[in-house]
Length: 292
Image (cartoon, rainbow, N blue to C red; front, side, top):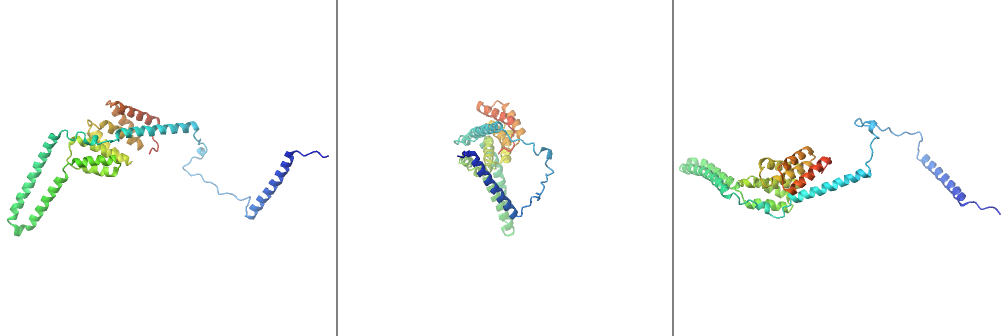
């Protein structure tokens, strides 16, 4: 009786047969397709902007580095959310109504003086108009022109009147996330003879609206105007914090750090100071390359 062949021997024989057939079929296929072993591929030309000596020096980040990046991004997202929640909350109209009636007597006096000057101009035009009426036959064209000028002055005067309803509407639009509408409304209010003590609120609302629209340039312009022109306003600290964050998100790292340092020198409230400090540390540890 012949001894049994080991199972592994049979498996090896079968594997050799299969591989031989596959190789033969592979050779036939490439022969049929006109494959030429001697053919050469087109040589890859290294662009002049790339240093060939550095082409193969890149090393992929390690899991530890990727983990650190994810951790920093989560910290930045959390910090950004806290800052926006603090300075962009507008949970009610407290900001819009704050100091609306403050200094009313002083502002009413200024408006009265402007009105007297305007009324004097109107009276002079009316006087000229009345005198012209006596020569209506020959001066009809002049009278029509004077009346047109008079109406333009009246309309211009009315358009300059501050309306608290427009002011409140701007903040209401912001709160309802209608940021484009809020921008238009804030710009309209800025063209009126609004009370001086509301200037920082209006500029802050305008800058915050542009910030939410991710228009970093116009947001920083409005907020910088507030920081420079209204240093004693009640929105100065929050505007400085939002301005620093705006510059950081626009990859202007040095400007953001400068604003934070200046703001912290004025001893802001604890919560704002805490956020300023955290943002300062984050910017110094993680320069915002491509931050969106």
